[in-house]
Image (tube, rainbow, N blue to C red; front, top):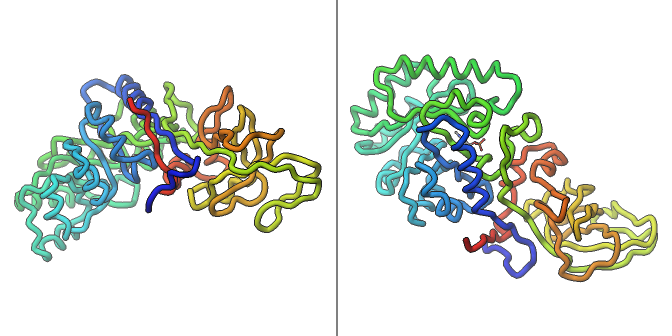
Length: 369
Ligand SMILES: *Cc1c(COP(=O)(O)O)cnc(C)c1O
């Protein structure tokens, strides 16, 4: 889909903030650890090519969720390691080798299917995934992990890494985290041959369990300046949100008492009041449950009134404002700030989802630095 540039709605991405967030995390974790930047899902909506180009000298590699995301980076000239965190089916092995993309191997069944399909694993780079308790993908026993490494090595593949993923690193209760750590360590210690790269730390683990980092971190949400726990745990150091969402008033009118607004006529003015229309809606990922939330105009909170429709929504203004007046949906105006985390709380979800839902219709704009 082509982004809608000829409309005032846009996401402004502060690439320098992303760099600064990486640096601050790197300064707080033990020295000598590798950094993998997680740029899956279009870099959590920030634009994976632009982000990766900007940070490529600060990191040791990139993580994505699938082959297409990996190929997008390679085709944009990104030369560092790219690890696909999800399962890529064995029919993609040849293209992975062609583009030097590292695959995750998560089951013996995958290896059996690769053999059945006649996939040539020679020279394929892989990381082994251990399911230490997340319950999505990965080997769940030492025996299976050992067997996979043996089979891959015999087939000529390069088993360069092994990793796991924590389910509760962003929670105050550490019991599940510690169980997963024990499980993962037992497998690492029991391997006949341990791959060189051992990694287990997402953002939350890097922030709150930095003593448990093996030899690399996989940084996602912290790079983009958000707290992985939402508001549950305090950040140990400041991060700067990298994405702002802005638009402008494209229609302003005065309502009389009792005038109704939007689909379902869910809002009626109590008295004469000013209303502004903003060109953003649920097709942009600005979901219908934003009704009743606020945006910023002229440094003031303005309530979203009436239903959010596909392409437009209406806000109540404290007074008349001119067409083109700036509207901030995520970000700062004066002393006021609206964060993706606050939006997530209103929606009963997590800040990750708020960012990822911003659709391709919204252009991503970058400063020229
Ligand atoms: C998405 C993902 C990450 C990054 O998670 P954050 O919480 O954003 O840091 C790390 N590892 C795996 C396996 C992932 O899927």
